[in-house]
Image (cartoon, rainbow, N blue to C red):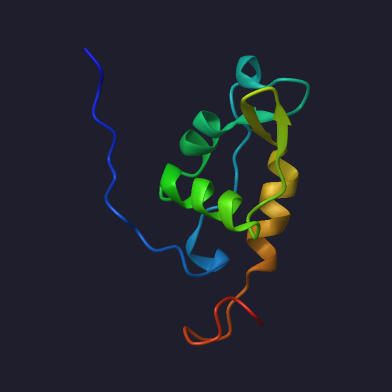
Length: 95
């Protein structure tokens, strides 16, 4: 039986509110890259829909495509999250 995915929207405004990555299980890494499933484990406060929407808009963390698989470098994701430092809630991440 398939487990229902939580689709509740949870806003992620600032990098300050997100705990940055801990090293995932080495068996989940593919050539130093990790899947979106691993991102869900590393950043449990950020829903899958956030990563998917940011990829679609083109303003998300850098990613790689291997066929249909989307892969991320955790160092690049951390750097991207840190670059979204907010000075206020009205500036949309532009510090």
